[in-house]
Length: 237
Image (tube, rainbow, N blue to C red; front, side):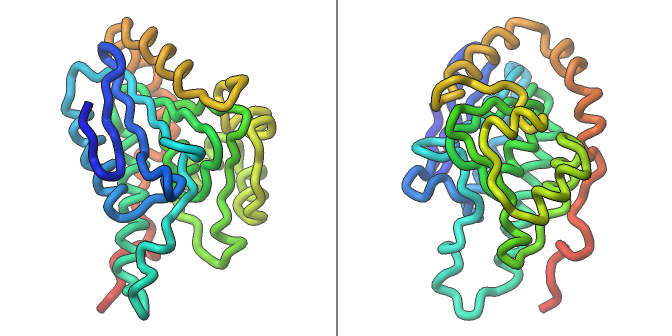
């Protein structure tokens, strides 16, 4: 097991890698540091020919509560390049998940908010426990929704439902998320991590090429050419 300050990368079974967001005191809210660690971990896993399935999970009571707004609390004013850099990292991590050779499963318990839901949407499928909650509150709070998150959500649940969820910013529970197709499997109980790893272990018994061939059609639908839009480029200084 390799432990970082903000993520833990573990190998619970042959061919299975678990990436656990590990800031439980902040409900795994993402910072620039956490996103850099996640981005780098995805690159390393992509180079590991033994990895067949990746499970993305969160420590503590939440999967990921979104962006950690306290990261830039000491800066007055906040440098736009800092917040824009974190946004670009969110997109890079989502792209890293969507382009990863192994199959990816998000095991969501508790809140998956904003960027947290984006990371779950970057996986091939999402398993959710009873207390899973999903939301994209950016518009309701006066912020822009990253284009890749909105586009991916629309592909998963359809543009009409996605528009309502993005514009309202409301929270949806595990029941509704399953009904609309945002969750692939609903797990009775609070923790989907163990059954997700068990399923990943079963999948890892198959050849890697077979697994990749199975998800490749879905990956093709998952914004293969997505890049940060012009409004997300580095600001002029």
